Length: 209
Image (tube, rainbow, N blue to C red; front, side, top):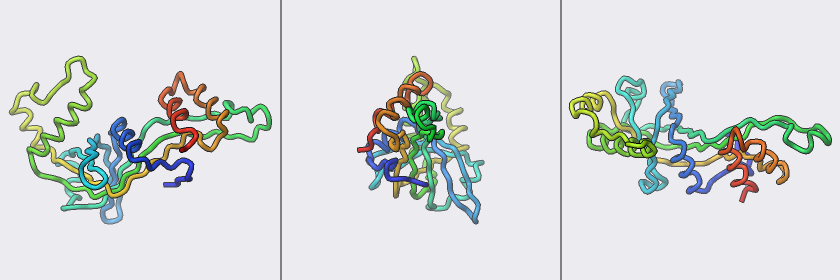
């Protein structure tokens, strides 16, 4: 990943917060020179391993199931807020016109070892955690116990748990740090209505500490 210093985010708490707020990941592995890509919601355990562990599940019918041996290297990308940035928002547009469009975004890249785990108890634990996390805002959160046990058992037989132990993690938080403070604030104001999360990111991460 192209990563100018002023966009680099290495604060582990900020990176973990970003992952937990945006858990739907692109998971990539290489097999025989081909890239296998899957899109999987992952739960982060901050306390496991040296740098954390990501956990999820895949279908047995997924080609990734056959690719995974005991361990294999994986590359994982988490996408957070993103927005188009118009040069019209800069003072320079009226003064000298030496400005161009760009895109603001926040991503977290993770490298680690991925493995499948054929353990029903472990799998149930992952599913329960993912369900609790993503049902939390529902008026009456769904839980696995709401479905008949024979139906749940039937579904469990079609999937397998996976985990990725994090070896390295870095973020690219490109949120106008390469612009003047005045330009960054104008960008934030322009984004407030349609992209409030990015407006907040510009203000939160500018200037880069």
